[in-house]
Image (cartoon, one colour):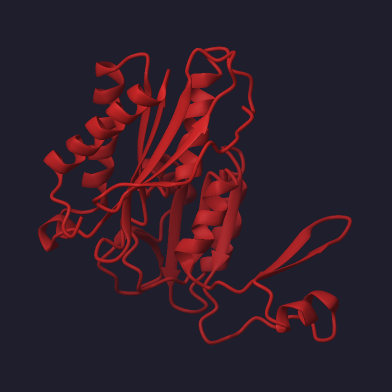
Length: 280
C-alpha cells in the first residue's frame, strides 16, 4: 500500500488537491483517506445506538445502512489504522495533516518541512512519481500478494482456504512466525510469514526510506532466484519511523515446512548482512 502524505497550513488548498488526486488514484486501485483532526474532536451523533455503544467502551462500533458502513474505532494510532487498511487490500492511502511523523510529504503552500517530496505539484507530477512514496506492508498484505502473483500461476485456486495448524512460533531474537497450509492440490505446501522488529542506527535513519525499500526489493529478487520455485516477498512496516517500531516482513511460499523455514532463515541472514539491526 502506498502512503501519500499531504501537509500544509490551514486553508492552503490541501482538501481541494486531495479531492482531485483520489479521483486519479481510483483508476489504479482501491483508495482510502485519513484526516488528522488535531484538537477538533469528531462528534458522534448523540443518542444514536452506535454512539451509545462506543460510549460504553467497545473497541469498534459499526453502523450499516443501505449505502455504507460507518466505523468508530477506539484506537487512534496511525500505524494501527494503516494496518487495518493494508489488510483490506487498499492500494493507496492519502493522509492529511500529519506534519510531525517523519513521513515524506506533498507540501501545499509555504509550510516549512525537511521531508518534501513535492511542493505545490500538479496532479501529473504526483501520478508520475508514485514510486517515490513509501510502501506500507503488513504480513497479511505481502502474503496476499504472493498468493495472487505466485500461487494463482501455479494452479492454486484463490482464495486459498486457510486454517491455522498451531500456535505462533517465537524465535529467540524476538521474531514471530505464522504458518498456514495451502490446499493439497497446490504444488506448494506452506506459506510462512515472519516479522522482524528493528531499531535502526542514526546513520541508517539518515540514509532515508528509499534505501531500505531498495534493500528489501533486492533481497526478494535474490532469494527468489536462488531458491526457485520458492516464492519470496520482503516488505516494510512503519519504516519511516525508524527509531520506534520499524519492521521487516517476510513471506515465503514453499513446498514444505522445512524448505520454508530454511528460506526464511536465509532471508533473515541477508537482512542482517545488509543492515545492522540494533536491539534485535
